[in-house]
Structures are given as structure tokens and as C-alpha cells.
Length: 277
Image (cartoon, rainbow, N blue to C red):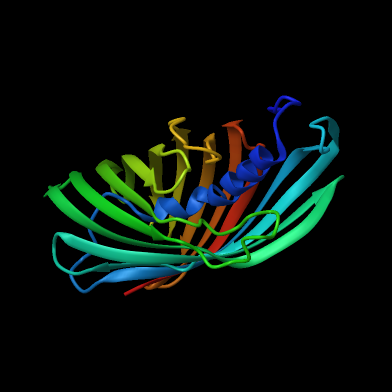
């Protein structure tokens, strides 16, 4: 585990905790693929996402004083809707509860950490390939900002994303897909901006089952101002979705952070119900 130097002040540790919360339960982003939704069609999903990370505690002099844990539980209903053959819109409010248990600090916080609104435009679509662009706005959250750990992002975020997807027929009734995305996330206020990369490889070996593996990278650009949070994280996820009716599905996702900078490594998951219309 990465351990910050002893000389780091308390404000830096608070910023790291804020960055940790803002990067929790990233499996939710798998829902935003390069393909457009059919006109007047779409889906809504209701995910519950637990997360846990082991942390190194520090006293007021910056000296290590033992290990602790940070746990969270997020409910983030996600909606996508096809306005036309090319335009897809959507939103996701993120309701989060977080608990911190360290040798020198035990506290919790609950609130609306963020609301994300996006619009995606499909530039190209054929039998196998698709290319889209997407713009996203994240609103400031609503939570008690004096509490430690911090929860709500105090400033708006803006993101521009390029998405490419390819369908891969393997055999009759068996299909695979590949989806790659790159985005620049501008974080207004003092926090550092983030370069976002995501690659997904999935397969549908049976008519009612889909499996995928995903690599997600948040690369902090180190351009924060003042006490702005600055972090990087590399995650891997494994997911399975069961279509138990023509319109309903259940998703199970496991997540593990493989490498991080300025935030502890953690693990988590997602259990979600999907409804397609």
C-alpha cells in the first residue's frame, strides 16, 4: 500500500479522503457504452455498491499510528434514453454513505455526493462498429461539508468523451464485443483534472447471459491548485448479467483496485437490477 510521507499535513489527508469518495464504485460507468439507444427506448438500472479500503492512519504530527478502514455504500440509479437514432441522454444521482474507522478518527457521512447528466451523439454506426462522442456535467453534491470524511464534491465537473465499440460475432448465437473510451474530466475549483480511460471486453455465450472484464483508469493530471485533491487509480472489474425476462436483468460486478496514488487500494462490487423498455 502506498503510504504518504510523514510530513504531509492534515489538510492533504482530508483531500485524499475526498478523492477516495469521488472515485468509489466505478463499475457504474460500464453502463455508458458507445452504442446509441433505440429511439424512444432505453433502460434504467438500480445498483447497490459496497466498497472497502484499508488505510494508514496518521497523528497530528504526521507519524503513522496504525491501520484503519474506510467503507461506503452507494445507491446510484442510472438512466439512458434514446431521443433519436443518434442522440442518447441520461442521468445518475449518487446517494452515498461512508464510514471511516481509523485510530485517531472515527466518523461517518451521508448525502448526495453528485448528480451526473449526459448527452451522447452517435457519429458512425454499421453492423459491427460504432463511434460516439459524449458530454457530461456533474453537479455539486449535498452533504455536511464539515464532517470528516468529506463526501460531496463542492464544485461542478465537466467531461468530454470519445467512445468506440465493435461487435465480434464468434459463432451462431455467440457474440463478443469490445468498447474503449477516453475522456478528459475538468474539475472546477482547486481539484486536479483527470484523464479517464476504459476498456471493456465482453461475451454473450448464451442467450440469457453476458460476461465482461473491464479496465478503468483515472489518471490525475497533477494540475490542482492550492489544496485541491489529486489522485490516480487503476481498477479491474469482472461482471455477469443474467437476463431473467425479456425486460429485466440482474448484474453482479466485482471490483479491485490494482494501483493507486494518494488514495488507498480497495475492493468492492455492484449488485443491480436492470429494466429495459
